[in-house]
Length: 187
Image (cartoon, rainbow, N blue to C red; front, side):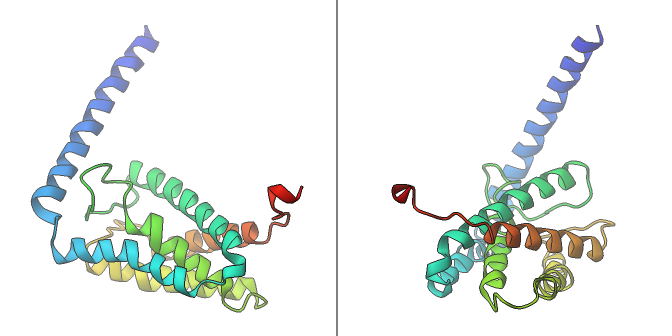
């Protein structure tokens, strides 16, 4: 009988998630859509990619995109887990569809920033580069996002964000160093 009770609790939990998503979607449509904060968030989603397309090292585009994709995946996983267990939250929503997933942070700011840091002075000490990136992100950018109400860290400390950003940088750095980028047609 315990299994069926679990199924019933799971059904109730799923309904609460749907109800919460409906509430967040309503907040986007009724309160956030077309505010300066919404436009700012949309700009944070689009402008970094435009800048990256113009300023990227073209001969390293594949490596950088792989590093950026890995950063997106890891940032999403970390955020979904942390938000799910209540470590932090994002009060500002940008899309009425999947309001938790479509954040400029996940798909633009962090991956583009990581790709830029990777291509700047590629022979420099990676620990120093990663630490500078993590410090700017955790102690600068995240504080700014708290100030404009895009991020609510609850009791989460900035040093934890620093560790997450350092981790994201190093995983992306490792993926950017993977060899074997020969064309499939050449094999």
